[in-house]
Image 1: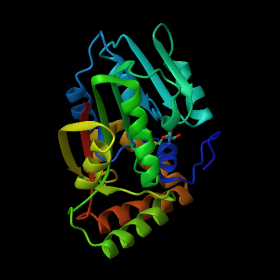
Image 2 (image 1 turned 180 degrees about the vertical axis):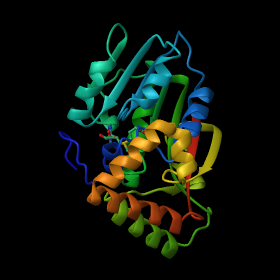
Image 3 (image 1 turned 30 degrees about the vertical axis):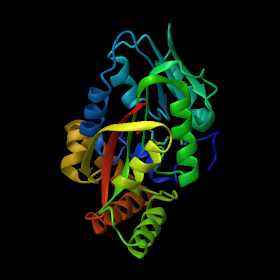
Image 4 (image 1 turned 120 degrees about the vertical axis):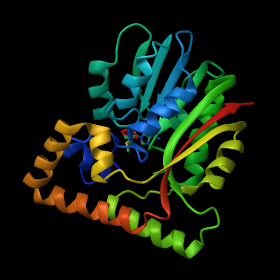
Length: 258
Ligand SMILES: C[S@@+](CC[C@H](N)C(=O)[O-])C[C@H]1O[C@@H](n2cnc3c(N)ncnc32)[C@H](O)[C@@H]1O
């Protein structure tokens, strides 16, 4: 994956090309719930890992935190974000969330969405460890990612699903069961304090209307009809999510640094 320019072959950027703004598995509703649980206040120093299009950044900034730092790997994405996120106490840094260069024990809240699922498990742990390093003791870490169910899913079912999902979204996504997400987070010095789940309905019409609103949904439909390759890719993704609907979900977790 190039970290300099946007690769529109990848599922999330294909969706962004269609005009879709909400690219996380549990949609806007789960994002709002996650940000609500983080309870961002005007005295908080916060960081977001992988702000992407800046959708959640604008919700978090609405709570007027004392400071906001977005850590975005992709240079082109970071440059676009800087056009809207700037000013006193607001900054976007280009870098890897696994090695953010932010000061240790300096933040009250850290969160990231739809960015751990695409990493190998040891890389997920590195990013969670980095969140733990930069948070103050008692600070909160929030995630919103792709989940698998049930907790005792067989290795062969898991392998089939991951293969289908990787083929359709063209990213090696590695979702985890709730218990696996909890274990990974708690192994890095956190205590999980909240969990919520939603169906993986990212490409279901009712969710798209909820997430994007009526007029943007029309625009997305128009773009999907206009570009045959984009249409084919998005329909393949939708078929894959539908096929594995009973095993795929969206999960949000908030954990406190102990
Ligand atoms: C699927 S998008 C999610 C973006 C956003 N959080 C959202 O939910 O809409 C993935 C984004 O994560 C960024 N990303 C992936 N790995 C990263 C890492 N290790 N550190 C920082 N950003 C990362 C990519 O550059 C991309 O912008």
